[in-house]
Length: 403
Image (tube, rainbow, N blue to C red; front, top):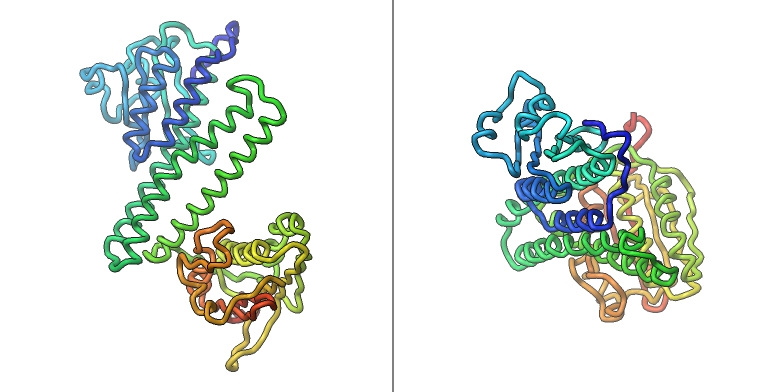
């Protein structure tokens, strides 16, 4: 990285910060590596008043190549194209057409690893303000590039599997998956603007306005969770969800999930308790198991009226001669009619009694599919007016098997 001049430490002005915010918003609408790269160099040059800008990314052999350029003649790009004997930083002044003291370059970093660099040609020695702005832009670019990479891989695999599927369910999943992807970008922009307003980028914010911004962001996160459910269901139907089984102590996962839902239960004055009559070990994916239990306990909190009770019980049992680990989530809610018990695990099913509550009818379907993929079972026991019990059972993993 080229060091800033020590005698010039001006802060970025408000117009530059606004430009940086607009660039971040623009990145939320990009869907490919090419779009991100082109946007990075064009907006980067504008942000710093640079005559040229270049983005370099590594190839499969970890050699940096120009991925996008702005303000650089084609002849110079051709001359500097491809790996050279000199290091990338030594080639940058020639590529940008300036001396080394008129150039500023910063790395792109994701998860502590350098994934590329962005550099600009300036008409003067770079200041601390210039370095701060380019570093902030580089952070945005690195995240946007990573999201484009991951998003492209997931979309390609998902679209390939979904195109092979047939029938109404496949068509519905394709439509919802596309809708979920399209909605995620503007929601990300809304969240970003809220953060900027809370940080007073656009001016002072009073306490009441800060509370409202918090509510907006909370609503956005709720919508994102609904979109995640839609995408999870589409991936499950397409067969692209990966389960990574390992020996897991079921009581520990149940404890974590119960603690996570504690504040939500307290808000409704519920008595949420966990009982552990044993400490069974199973083979399962701990992250997916936590997702299932949070979903089921969360449903119990959502559908149980104020001052209700919810009990999460971990135990061992026997069924059909087999030893099983069991988690039973029992609530004192309104119960589920026998006629509905056979369909509540179907995707997008919502009882007429809960249409006023948030959700799209995917939580139970996702939980049921994940439990099934891990070799377990998920069932419901309920009577109207007497609450409901959702029961998860997995084959017990003996200690000799876990070793």
